[in-house]
Amino acid sequence: MARIDLRRKLSILADAAKYDASCASSGAKKRDSRSGSGVGSTEGMGICHAYTPDGRCVSLLKILLTNFCIFDCAYCINRSSSNVERARFTVDEVVDLTLAFYKRNYIEGLFLSSGIIRSSDYTMEQLVEVARKLREEHDFRGYIHLKLIPEADPKLIELAGLYADRLSANIELPRDEALGRLAPEKDAGVIRKAMGQVRLKLEEAKPQKRDRIKPPAFAPGGQSTQLIVGADGAPDTEILDRSSSLYGGYGLRRVYYSAFSPIPDSSAILPVSRPPLMREHRLYQADWLMRFYGFTAPEIAIGADDGMLDLAVDPKLAWALKKRDVFPVNVNTADREDLLRVPGLGVKAVNRIVSVRRYRTLRFEDVARLTRSIDKVRPWITALDWTPGGLTDAIDLRARLAPEEQPEQLSLF
Image 1 (tube, rainbow, N blue to C red):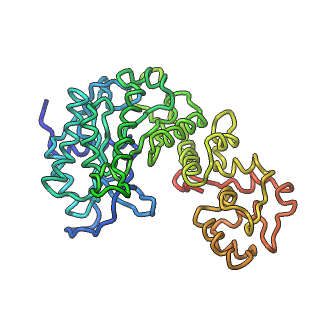
Image 2: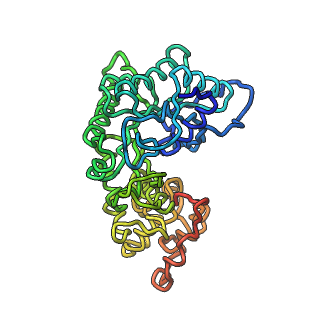
Image 3: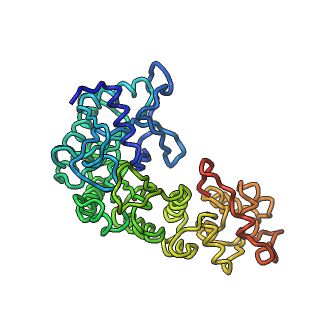
């Protein structure tokens, strides 16, 4: 095979990594920026932007170690039977690239995944070696996210957690049956076993009051996973049920949703077109409701018809339209949990309302000052000087409140 220069490798392996959506750094610690020759990269290859829960935007070098793969997953562009240009980094090349980008202030960390080469153990060894060299030989203190190879030896997974801030093993598809059909070399049980191992190690690493010696840190950013949407026939409600069980069973920080993207020379058993971008967005909104608003997957399903989330309205509004008997709620007396279910009220707005009403009885104008979405909130609340009256019955709320969202202007609520 002809030798490929480093720049070309970066182009190939950064592009190959774009299909993995689980690229976030919510486990990264804040640190002072290092001095460098510039701010921001003029080269787009390999730089992905992710957001932490506190709103910080961070830049990561997001690449594959290699896009060679011995597996033949039907939905993957890098499958063994795919006719794509192949490339492979050495361990030292990834280390050098990461340090060079980091010192120039282009990135704050590394997201590293890989196709399977030789064997699962060999591939995982290479990923761990990158992280080890960065940490031990170069005292690298930036963020590292390593993709796990679930079939690898548990000892290698344990080592990965000692060097990485976050680990992730992709569950891939909502249905185990579909995974067995579309990715015959993968086993859903093996993936869950690896995720279970990570959860146990995370529990062991939590310091206890009685501990005199603090246990070594293990993947302080926790673990995440990814579900491909639209590659099999799973409806949205089934996807959310799977996500809910993953959160509860494995203590995940995030479940990421990636709309299936048709690939060249794909199998006839795959869809010929990708699902709407809005479907992926609605799943993220529903996931947000489960993680921060106290909704359960069955409750969200109330607003879904035939198992699919409404693409015209967000899932909180869809639920409220089906549960109009529980509205309006009184902003001066309602529990925080009930206020979180009001369309248009976010967590910050609810916290402000609960705080302010300790000292005064809220009027409608007070609520308007505490939230940016008062027109969405208006039909669902009462205040000292406000009741919606017949508004909820006289006006078609769905038509009135459905946002005119464009794919490039999506927001959570």
